[in-house]
Length: 215
Ligand SMILES: [Zn+2]
Image (cartoon, protein in one colour):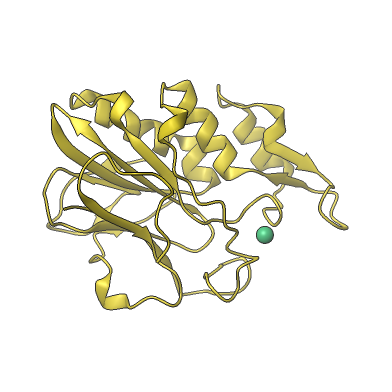
């Protein structure tokens, strides 16, 4: 298990699973993930969404990924612990899954200064070669800056490489997140074949989890 690199604001358990972890310790599947931007709170049924939040203690929630970014959030909303987990590939990031999660927290009286945020292992710029249509879509985001794309700087490829963590970070900071509260883990799922599953590298069914539980 890989733990976010930040002290949480309250007692909790959280982590990013690896291919070495015991599957029985992971949360039940509650989301049918569709690379969208919907964030829900129901724990009773499987829903088509890419984010889940809760204020319920001792309830492990999570998202499954194999190149996309698992996002963990933990902060105080009206004085009580609030946690969320989001699934963000480039489509979800551009569609606003992270912005929606932050907006939900604020709408419930969330104190942005208290919010700890962590992006887990994903396909990093070293391997995230994309088509120009992806860059065109991401460029529309108001938080976009040109350092999020690198051209031809990784081996033979002349195609653009996108920085997913960077895009999400730019969105979060533009919405007022505190940079001192970031605890991201910048590992690449493609590079770390002994530790992490990667869809692009060829793992078609296996997934790792980003999960969180109020203690
Ligand atoms: Zn890599």
